[in-house]
View 1 (cartoon, each protein chain N blue to C red):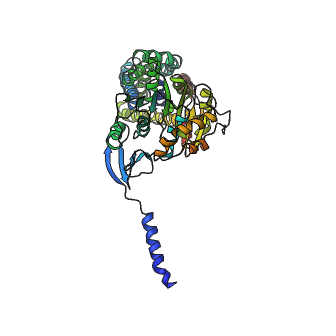
View 2: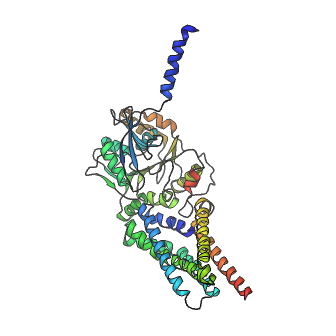
View 3: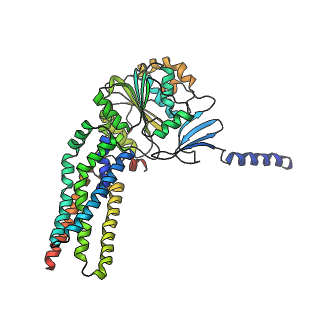
Length: 180
Length: 295
């Protein structure tokens, strides 16, 4: 969600901040997440492991880096083709934000699979997983929109989100290794 | 004492009546993509507001009997950019409101090209229905984001003599239109002796940031403060005071008709810096304008 808040700022200089731009961003994030949930669930059917979960998490973070490097040329290129804020921001959102959003959508169902040991507790763990992901999404939204934008550049905040994501993935991986 | 009592009572009644909210009548409401619009009328004053009934945040007002009169000081100050560029051929107005500024320009210059950019089609409908705003062959309204319009103008090679930036409200600033990158884009669609007039804020934490950003793009500029803060900036050297004074004479009658005197503008205008020179500049990477504006 922190990333979603920033995506508005990334698109605004090129396509403005009309309702269409926000509409396009939210649509693309929702589509990507829904696809991610589907893929994550699918993936968890075959030899699920903590290592693979951490790899997905780390990959989601890593996909923020191309945004940092290519946002300006990508946006300029799209603006040269179409100046329509609706079409332009849809294309830009797909190119820049779709991949990281799909990968982060995959994390939740995959993690549920690892946590659930018997069907009896499945609801409990699913609820727990949704609590964590949505609660930290709320925190990410608040921190980004109220404070981070006042302290840092957009690119610095993206790097920060990248760092946090990778740190979480690495910590989880190391902890799981220790336990084994 | 006794003889005074009726008078005292009368005074009390008067005070009470004055304290009661004046009877503002809502004459129209319009649904919009962004927020609902309301037109209220009170005592011959018709206003556009973005909030039901509360007419405290009026976007635009017009005297029904004297539609030419400029009610808000800030609109007078915006029109005052004519003292910097008295003979415009092509003007861009970003943010329509009730259409006060483009209509005043049209009356003063029947033949010039005027482009208006308004993101909200509902605002345009209300301006036409209730505030006497009229398009014509050389006065077009473009329904889009101001920054996108300027980017398109760069591609088309259009140049403007006067650019009026009036897209900010009390509560919300389009942050992508307060950055250095945006102002550089604006600068590149100005004629060499053109002027940009920007309606912004005079008293909050945003003020020094905004000032430093304008200075970084345009160098010294004229600053007029009265509740709102209006900036007159030019792409090259700023015209001197003597030129402003000479131009003021040309607009004496026109401004008088609209309820103010050019001298009033000259008294306010100053090009002195009253902010910290080292303030951080607003950029597309760093533009927390709304957070700064609320402090």
